[in-house]
Length: 99
View 1 (cartoon, rainbow, N blue to C red):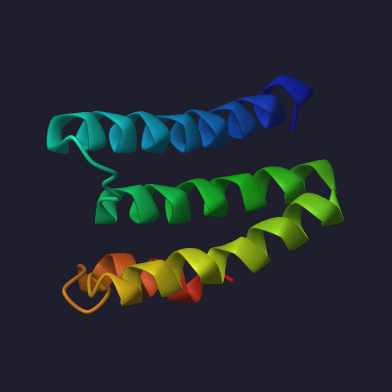
View 2: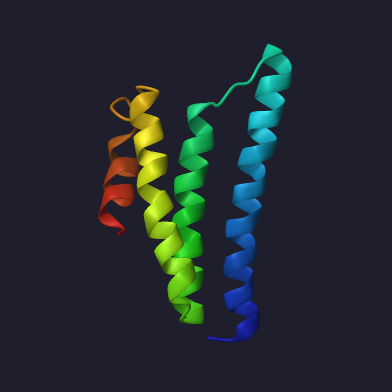
């Protein structure tokens, strides 16, 4: 795989990580208080999967390890918000099956 394609995977992951921050910022501004929507954690999971793939393509164990550790934190935060159970079953299968 070409280097530019590997970097593109990393940029996509970083773009999703950035978009979740913007989403949280907009929701918080609208509510006039700190808000962390469930979409924040779902985008985090998607970005973590893509960034893990980037780490694998780069053969960078530290990136992969970091994503695996934080991955379960994102799932736990969805559980604490009581948003994990009503989540789409296909999303759960992909998220749980990936690691």
